[in-house]
Image 1 (cartoon, rainbow over the protein chains, first blue to last red):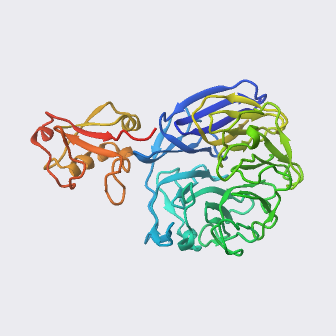
Image 2 (cartoon, each protein chain N blue to C red):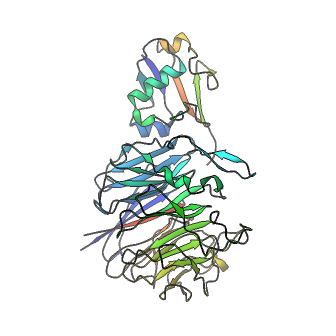
Image 3 (tube, chains in turn yellow, blue):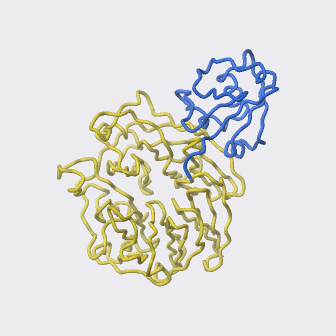
Length: 371
Length: 98
């Protein structure tokens, strides 16, 4: 029977939650790197025992940890993220230019085909790549040439938080940056351009045609339809059917179009999941009810999924990297909260149960489906 | 031999005990002790001082012989008691945050 491994990054360490394909009983391993923030924790699709974790604290900075045995043992690899060439500047809060300063790694995205190839999205926003399993890192500086001088940090920092590697085209990479927008390369990372047409951010950007500056929270893509992208923006849930050339809103009947994560069902490319959050001032679920919303029509028509989720007095948040899906026949959906719960559904979201209730605040959730 | 006391998180990162020993060629200065520490424990590079600027990270402090050496230049000689190992050089994580 298959095994499911849920990789959870939290404010105070990493946890590995393991179950068989029934997903009823779970074994909890951790905390790994106790006391450190784990912004992201992911596994290589090409070698599932190759795991990467982004480990940091405000005191001692950034570490990257690597495991070659599914998380039993770990070794620190290179933590030197140096911007390529002249560092350059970006927009600062007061309208002046401010030099890029490395703060942390938000995202580690392993290649689907090469376990030694891994991408790192960092704050201040830039994309790095390692071709040797994290032993060395090199920036792809063309990204910051895509109007980087106009990027400005949002409340969460100027972070590159989402990396999508197109499975059908190894030269295409799509990244999202808060609060700059979405960017795409079609030549393996040499040159990049903003792909934000159709995004409307009237409360943040007075220019309705602003090419950059949109506060994109998360992107999702189904591997069988790489041209179709789904986006949770600061406000608005969006969709593109042409690889990001044009976006249209699909918020429909959501109770709030604000939120952080977005995910696509493993076997149904038109089934999408979001978790509406009340914003801007509160950042907790509307009415104190934790509800995942599912659209089976690629957006616009959404249904609330509530069975097994708290429907009163619930004031947690679900952060942008904290939702993921497995690829079992009955698709599993997983998300973690700032209250330390990790919820799982083994039936595409119809019903939910907590795997764990009392972890530190969850920063990221990834899932590995193992044979 | 110079004795260096590490804060908890750096001990676990380096798989070391509370106190480690390093050998310094030439005078024992802030810079030479940190160079020797990072050479013996490469995983500590970037955790105490910045990779590029070599500036001390803001929430890290250096103490020895009941004095705060945190703001001194890297080439500042440390007391003889540190150089001989009679007193340890302490790397301290500031008490801050949650």
